[in-house]
Image (cartoon, rainbow, N blue to C red; front, side, top):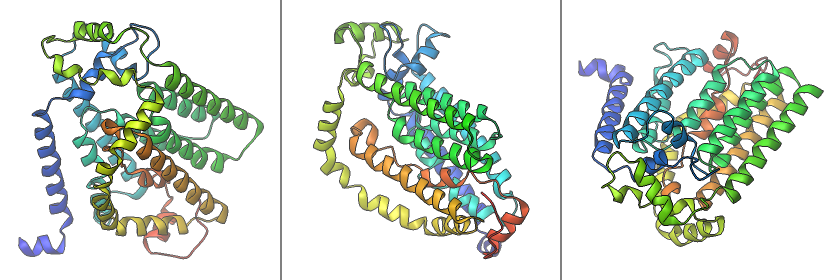
Length: 356
C-alpha cells in the first residue's frame, strides 16, 4: 500500500485536502459569524443601500434570520462552486489519471476552495461561481456580454469591492472568450461600452450614495428586529461599516497596514509553492497560436493583479485579510482547448497553431 501511495500520491493528497476542508468547516461552525450574519440582515428598508442585495433576497423568504442560515447558505454556494469548477476542469483539461496532479494543485490550493471554506459565509465566493459560469457558457453572441454585465452589477450590489475583485476578471473573460474569438464589430463594441459605463456608474452610486440615511441607533433597531434571536446584539457590532465614507476606510486601512504586512512572508511562501502551477500556465499561454493573443492574456493578468494590489491597500481589516484568490488561475481557465491544443500543451510542443 505504501508503494502504491508513493507511485501515485495524488489520490492521497486529494483525500488529505478533503479532510482539511472538512476540518475547516467544523471549526467555522464554532465561531460567531459577525460580518456574514449582519449582511443577511441588511436590506433596502431605508432605501438604496450598499452591501444589501443578499439580505434583501433573504428578506423575501423570511422575516426572521437565524444564525445557522449563514452556514447553510455558505456551505451550499461552496458545494455549487466546487461542482462548477469540477465541470470546468473536466471540459478544459479532461479528468483522467494524467490530469490528477493539476487538479490536486488547483483544487487543493489554499488560495481557492480552502480559502472559501475559511471565509465561509462571506460573499467572495459568489463572484468566483459567476465567473466560472461565464467560462462554461457559449460566448458567441452579444447576449454573453450583457450577461457578464448583469453578473457584474449583481456583484457590485452584493459588495462594491467586487469592482476590483471580480469585475476585472469578468471583463477579461469576455474579452478573451467573445471579442478575441468573434472579432470586434459595431454592435458588440457598442454593447461593451454601454455595459462598461453602466457598471462604472453603479459603482460610483454605491460607493458614494449607498450609506444608510438614518441614525445609527435606528438602523441597529431595524436589524435587531430581523434577528431570530434579538438578544444576540454582539452580532451587530459591525453595523458601522454602512456609515463609513471612503476616506475613513482608507485611513483605517493605513493604520492597520503594519500588522497586515506581517502576513506577507506567508503569502510569498505559498506563491512559491505554486511554482509548478505557474510554470504550467505559462506554457499554456506560450502555446497560443497568435502573438496578439499571448500579449492580451499577459496584459489581462497584469490588469487583474493591479486591481488586487489596489484592493489590498484600500480594504479594511474586515476585508483585506481574506482577499487573496486564485485570480491568475481564473484568468487562465477561460481556455477550452481542442484535443490538438491539449496534446500540444501537455507535450510542451512549440507548435503555434493553437488558438485561444
